[in-house]
Length: 458
Ligand SMILES: Cc1cc2nc3c(=O)[nH]c(=O)nc-3n(C[C@H](O)[C@H](O)[C@H](O)COP(=O)(O)OP(=O)(O)OC[C@H]3O[C@@H](n4cnc5c(N)ncnc54)[C@H](O)[C@@H]3O)c2cc1C
Image (cartoon, rainbow, N blue to C red; front, top):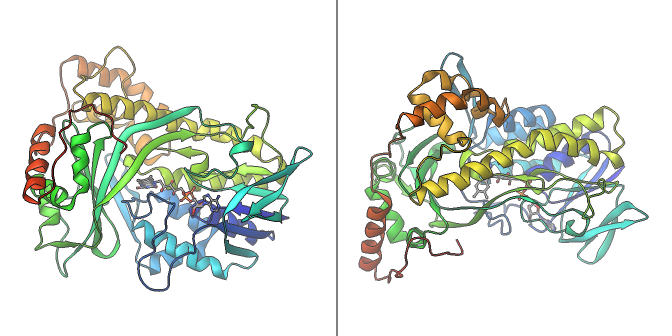
């Protein structure tokens, strides 16, 4: 079978290598030229490429099953497997410390060795179809015939837009990232950690996370409401550095005696939750010969680092369907059913949770008139340990978000008692704004006069 894959990101390369390994003739097309032999890989078009990434265990597990050479290459570039200690369960695989660039560099480089897979540079302009079947793709104006087209074009991919119904779930989540990568000085120990992968602190209108990557690299990440235009100043190095000095845990991590920045301050584009099934614009069953996978199907706000796990779980399911004899041209329908059951709940969970968090960041209280969002259920475990028994399924993604349903009433009782999660030690949102404004003035950058709630583009 001839397979054309739109996108040679993690989803496209994993599907491509796996299908080539099953004897198919695969071409993966990407507008990106791939990593340079030396120096930084700019990777324009994948906004998150240089942003903080944490890697869940599923990423390594699926890779070991489907593309062991890529897993080995990733470890050789420095990826560090970690374990988590779960209460009542003991040590469990916790994922991997790695930069996203390190991960993709391993996949893209080793893809050159996969017999039957050709990764080519080109922009896919659209998908060819006739007689109700997919026939291939148009690449930079030229036709490429294929029996199966896999849309692995990511959260912003548009190539199959005229054949797929748009996302009706999720939308902009109201949060934006700004982060920066650092490297520990030789012999320096990491700063404070909440678990082997990350440190996190939650404030009254923003959040900060540190992800430890491989070989002493780490990312410092500040998450702010998109609507809070005053916090947008975090994108200026002087303001970002001032915030790092003012937030106790970050001050330790970014102490110049401990670590040095290795990138600029990186503002991210708007974050979104989205789910797009396989069905056509008219709602009819998926077009035979076209299947979408990865972020092109399900995108979740990255604060829980689920995207690559959901992507690789989708790829594993797609391959399992094909391996059990499903006609490749018709695989879209059963795959759609699985994604509806297993992926959509995560998008819905994030959509609900993010909306409520942004509302609370803007001064709202816990809303006890409706189901508690998952983050609040998890927080209440510090008061009622029975709640914690349900959390491993949710946190490890071995269960679906509904695994928290049985303990929601317990969490509700905690909040009904008047308890609220305490903010981490550090500046309130208003104090942080003053700190940023002062840093901007000292740095000679005029701080814009904005009110909280003004809409900003991110
Ligand atoms: C800010 C941010 C932080 C994140 N952090 C985490 C994290 O900590 N942990 C985690 O697991 N996930 C995280 N994610 C999610 C993760 O990055 C995605 O789930 C992952 O990139 C999905 O892989 P993909 O292959 O489906 O899509 P992508 O990585 O987006 O790859 C799509 C590819 O398709 C190509 N392409 C698109 N259109 C065309 C076209 N027309 N022609 C040719 N090529 C095309 C692009 O160039 C790209 O190479 C984060 C996401 C964001 C936005």
